[in-house]
Image 1 (cartoon, rainbow, N blue to C red):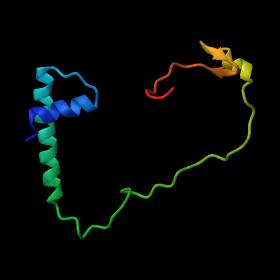
Image 2 (image 1 turned 30 degrees about the vertical axis):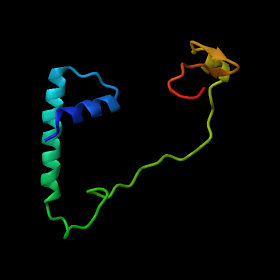
Image 3 (image 1 turned 90 degrees about the vertical axis):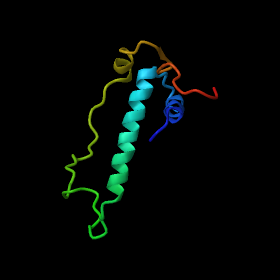
Length: 97
């Protein structure tokens, strides 16, 4: 069984702030999930051939052709914040900068 501290540790890694009810729920859910995984590990698959798909899939691709493009000014005209020919967006990655 997954203990309460492990759920809290996982939540902290995911930057989640869980209520007591959520901690209990996820403790049960994670325990159930790991129990099901343990049951699947017991299944003998040694006689099965490995596959990546149950059926053969052949992707239908279009021809790669150069076609008309939008003008840069037209594209940038829809931007909320444009600078030097580029869209400016808020930084979403933490760290250096």
